[in-house]
Length: 264
Image (cartoon, rainbow, N blue to C red; front, side, top):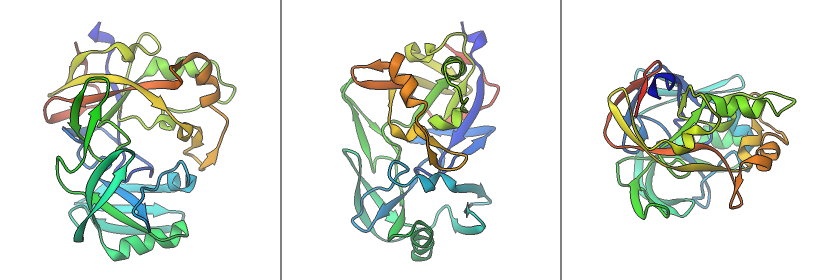
């Protein structure tokens, strides 16, 4: 079984709802990959800001080099240190979970405010345990980052192929913002993965991921499309949730890389 399951792509999304970064190697931690969704934009009322309401966020492109994060938007660029933060801790919510965060710096917050057109702050989650998410399915609590729910999203290659066969306008895996893309033999077989290892890390499957309108945002241009949610809802609607990909957690820390085989 495991011979066909190979890691094809790895992505991190340093700032929630901004564009992602493709990686060859990533360090898996309990909260998610290192530097994955450790930062988030919040508005003047300390509410999280996402692509659901502000599709233009997909056009902000981060890179990480030498301990600094640079953000490019149109022809503008801004940079701050990975370790940078100041001021007192803030309490913010990511959906139903309360998280403790700190602002990165006023200059960075002002830069995002200028380009988004409203007041906002860039904040960072500092430590493991600053946000906890309870799995209603498992009755278990996990330490997570600022991701919507779980630390990792895994998608099988055949799931996308199967969907694209039904679409007039083909899409890429970036629509679904995965952390790990693996080669598979059958569509959606990743739903039924249990516990498995990749490289140095053991992962546990929690549940298939319910998708929202955000998958209709075209990351190439920030435009809202009718697909793929319309087509997915015809064959992946389970209990009023449209499923694509699966949420997983890591059971230990370690590196994984593109080309690693999944061991079940």
